[in-house]
Length: 230
Image (cartoon, rainbow, N blue to C red; front, side, top):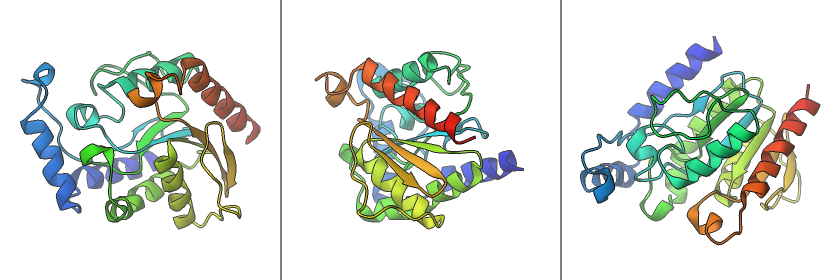
């Protein structure tokens, strides 16, 4: 039942054209790609969530990258951020392989699901508040359908904020004062624990702000929290 409902949600996500600026940008990015991707057939549509419908751990990102998921059609696939994320998920035992190249590469997640607050690639990786709000119901519905989800891993402050907003749409009460994002920050959020991580962007990984050991620590903690929720 949940699988069918998630499939229906994915179809509606992929068909969405609510944000004219993002519709134009995702198409423009596909029409004029970097040289290394010329000849690739771009997805150039909203990107649905991906993973295990019975997941206890849900990873929430900001939005697809213009030449990552906007090209491949799967969240965090085909870019450096995805290399870090799926490598960490594999080391944690949540993925069957350490890399994600395209949506047909055989990657499978177990007890994990990967999604984002905004489903279309935004210019400069900066969605507007209105774009976020138009897309947010998709995340709220997705969380509602992932009935075993207990830990929300927010990759960055934007995802942290989006997770708080989506959970509130589902009726979860956020603690007061409003929890602040930080690496390894934790907050109870209705049936969930919200767990923060720096985003595995090149801006963070190249500078050493986020290391592989730090990211591994986040998923080790996520698994501890998921196990404690049984």
